[in-house]
Length: 351
Image (cartoon, rainbow, N blue to C red):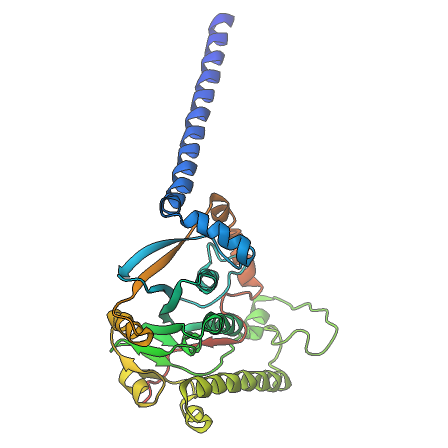
């Protein structure tokens, strides 16, 4: 091949690479434009963007007044209600959990509704077996704050397949709890699980090397024998958390502590059993929640909205560090359900 031919071939490859790069850049730019403007269009059309900006200035920063787009969901009239779904594990995002934003989204939705003076009520749609103790308690407190801003505000919870343990915990501030006929609820209790792999590690020739400052610093070390004293320490902590759960159920449901304590052994209840025991108010469907809110607010109908969270490309790329980090976390015992939990573990159904 002559020098001229080689030059032409090299020049052609250069042009081809530049063209390919330009095509990819154009696709990326188009994707970004559709993603961003698609999320903002409804906000600009309805004036929601301006209201959100004004609200952020009036009430505080982004975390106090999150940028969420309102969508009309159902109903009519002038009484504004927001529906907030609570699905899956109630946990705040942890390192290694790709795109985990469940509890954060619920938290931001409640705060968004709290700082909107036009919102008169929340429909909490719960389908969860519970989750972290602190995450559940934070959402419980945020729902209380929503009502404290305006004593006329109301909350109605609609339970799906399951609303147990931490999911029942966050339902307690509700003025009315409605369960589907097939809902499983209850599971008032606390659980902590760990693993002991001492014998397996010995068979594999794995040795534990732990440097610690105190006897209890390596609590429940899976490579060491189970320490009865450490079990006793955790049992006291669990009992204190259990007592808090019982107290909140007693205060919010108008039941005596003795009655709640008898029900709070971790068992779950079907909807009709939960009604008989005073844990929920009635059996119905989603439409029952809208009807109940109209009754509580003394209006003919309610106009229900839902929030759509705006997710940027940066959020996607920051969603999680990937499989390698998750595997590393699992090897270190860092699971998404570690620690003290208000979480339902399948057990006998109450009678």
